[in-house]
Length: 477
Image 1 (tube, rainbow, N blue to C red):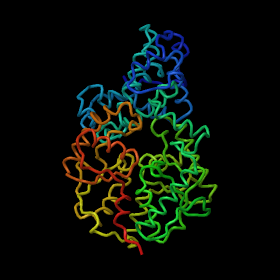
Image 2: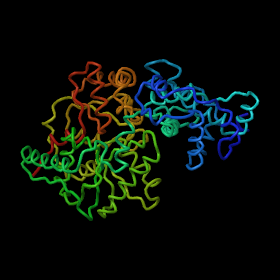
Image 3: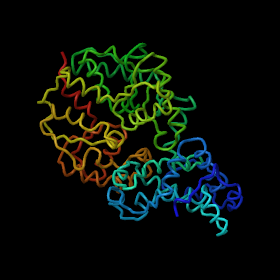
Image 4: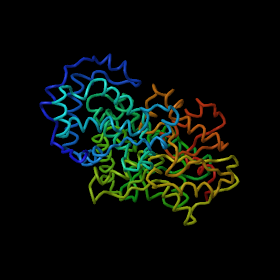
């Protein structure tokens, strides 16, 4: 009788009144979770606060239509387990994606539909409890939100979307990893303009150092353009590229130099970080970060947004700039690999095929490949100058997640889980290729894969960005 479900505009006050008083202290809640939370943000009655937050999200967003549709579907066939690398490793029924999604969908059915509210009154007991909320708080961060399961679901349920919505609601009551909150909070409160709290003078010193490195390595003068108005592109990359992934950034700069387009891009001194953790757990943070990017584009009168090698920075801008950043007037979003691929096809890049002699393989970041957006372009670039290139299987849209997706890579306290459970299948996949270089054009994937290789005995593997290898092989006049 699923078709009889009827939605209400907000959660019933009678339901709220029937919930039990608080029974858990923040300290007891922390004991139940594998990740660190900010305990001062977890106060009051969890079921009441969860339902109020859920009601507010449903009222002020477009999630209601989607969740109401999913709630009418008996999503328990478990076909998604065939695609979930976490379940394939643990064989725990609670790691089946549709089981996880059904936790939130059942809360919706019981507390936001007429049928569920009536059944709740007849039974005399509320469905939502502290234990259920804490189970959601834990299990939704076992998921890497890679969305591979969506390709297997015969009913069309996007379990990754349900995971995101559940995390969004949980974050509103303080149940979110501190690692995901602290950098973004400082960024949004104006304490810093990037997620690593690096002041601009330090970034400027880094850019000057990289210019000197390029001069020494390649014998050419390459200057990073800063606050240049009227350019085609305004460039946003993960701030880690300025700190730990220098060759990625230098590779991007020499591509612009080689194509004669140094005057086509610029970096903003006010906001340069493409990282957007809102994609992992909070729509209002997602929106705020995108609006910062849009503000800098307008300030410098650029025409397009260019994203560096970062999967979630690319997806958040590409998929949500229209939603949160200006509708039909939102600027085009381009990934740097698309620019480099076009330059290669137009004959503007010369890459020496004798420089990279080691075996190379390519890892598809989920945020780039799952929807079929960027799959073949980086492979064609690599094949053009890497003589010993091999593929991982599966690949492309069906790629295996690095194991640190959905922001879990930032939660260092769960590293044993990330590298010993969610990342094991990827370690096996890399080992099977025998590759020395694993190209991963995503800041989060790089960090996770390095830890996966370290913890799984892949000592001879080097994880790099696409433009790291381009920097080594590029021929400059």
